[in-house]
Amino acid sequence: MRSIKKQLFFLFIFVATILTLLIFGAMRFELSRNVLPLNQSITQQFVDNRTNQINSWFGERIAELRLIADLPARHSYTRESLFDETFALENQNQRNYLSIRLVSREGVSYSRFYENFSVKERSYFKELVQHPELDYTVSDLLHSKEDQQAAVIILYRLNRPLQDGTNFISAAIPLSNVQTLAKDLALYDGKGTLVGADNQSPKINEKKEILFTSGIDLLPDWKVNYIVPKKSLGGTTNQLWRLLFIITVIVLSLLAILLLLLSRKIIAPILALSNTMAEVQKGNRNIRADIQSPQEIAQLATTFNQTLDKVYENEALYRQASVQVLQTQIQPHFLYNTLDLIQWQVLGNDIDQAVTTIEYLSTFFRKGLNRGNELITIEDELAHVESYLQIQQLRHEELQSFTIHVPEELRQQTMLHFLLQPLVENAINHGIRPLRERPSSLAIEVTKLTTETIRIQVKNTGLPIPEEKLIQLNSSTKTPTSTGYGIANIRQRLQLFYGLNAHLLFFSSTEETIAQIDLPIEKEEKNDDTINH
Image (cartoon, one colour):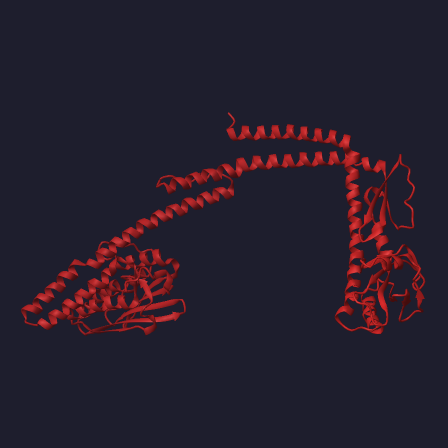
């Protein structure tokens, strides 16, 4: 029996296909009935857009002339100094200006390089004189005698006339650039032309052709004409419909295939994995992800299962290590022996020493409990070990002396609690006490190896560690035993808390035995709430 997802999938394909056929059928009917008006609208927009480009081009020229026309209102200009401004504009825009002249109120057109002539009888000059509210006028199509090119004249009124009677700027604009914009109309293989007021619109065959016209805002007497064959306006309908239909079928087919692959190969396994994660969040420790999936999803599920198993294993090890630490902290035999020592000191009337021993014992348990925190400052950890050594020195004369050295800048650095006392106890019990023929000493040294690493060494001059035992101590696979779990406990706690960034190693010779711990420097912000101050 097919699943609901598959049924829904095939239903989607069926409905999508029928709906697509209906839409394109209706589209074809509408396009066939309204194709000519629609394409006419598109073509008119196309012509209007090109006309707007021509209008913008003229707008740029008028804006440039306006800037020069405004100069006399801000500074004192003569005809020659104003020619300097027009000359600069011509040189900067050689493609856009044939020449720029200055015209007096009497209609005399002046040039720095060519002869003067009168424009008094020309229509664009008369229009600007008769209508003082106008800023500029544009001529009909002219032929520039100076440059031998077709052009139009933009006559722009100065903001303030010059003292010598100069009232206008006359700029000859070449039509070549504008005509190019009009002739470049290429939609439906039509023909575009730029027509002025003195030109008539072209004659067309109304049965076979359509004339599109668009006026130029900045040139009221000018317009763009575009002639298109009617056949070309309707010839694209079937091609457009077929192209759209093919594209739609291809897209729907690809989407259907993709949806099927996603549903069978990716979506379903991911949903199953998500459900497994949700069950784990609810506390189900027996559930595991299904690995019968595509390779990538199966690898993800396998990694998830392995990570889950490792988390549970680490939780168990951490709980076990924590219990063992508490047991090590209590140390009944050490407490009983110390209490016996205090009793003998009191019976021997050595009250001061008894009080001192009690202070050592108090410090030992106060620092050892550390308010239940895992992290402790190096200073407090050494205080805990020092109180232990003070008591042991009273009980064992073999421990002749001990020293503790730590740089001042490392005292407030944090470390995992209860790492040094088991190492010191191990050194006394297995290194110093068995060597009775001579006193021994013990030293604790803290150094900063790098900006990221601290090294702590517990050294003693007692009995060396046998080579076989040394290899066993340095083995990371050593498991705790009922008689000596201290070293294994330290190694487990280092691994659980620091990972691969912390190391415990032992070195031993006839002169000295060293227990060495390398720890990463903890960032202060991580430990602000967990340090026992």
